Image (cartoon, rainbow, N blue to C red; front, side, top):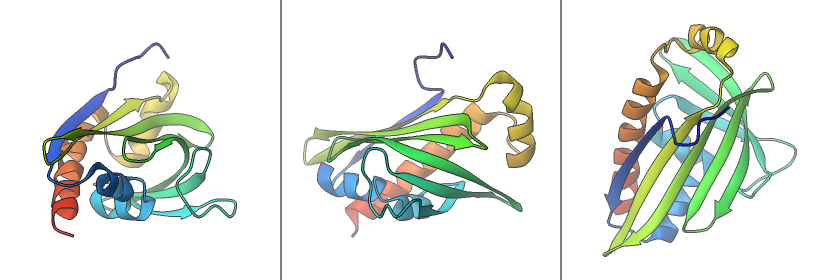
Length: 156
């Protein structure tokens, strides 16, 4: 796919150390508590921590709709960046990335996603998730996730 920039992104200032924020976003269990659609996970193949190459099955929920994906961690740069690529049925779906930059007494977090679905896979995946305007929904989901992250990081 020729898309270089993210399909949806959001930023927030957080009054917490970058290392604390990284610990939250790099824990798929905590991320499931903060996110809108992503609601749970299980590490695959005996992995039990966020490191490059580690894989986890994500459980996603939107209303009565439920679906799973497999994610592979591509970036695990403590205090700076955490990212993973998402696939469904072996087909690329998305990339999610959290960039953390020190700022003042805390940090700025940018959450971004890239829609990696092949054109033919968009309609079937939209049927499963119930989301037809994925970019708009992801922008709203990112804003909600970042607000929850800020609350969690600033009030341990």
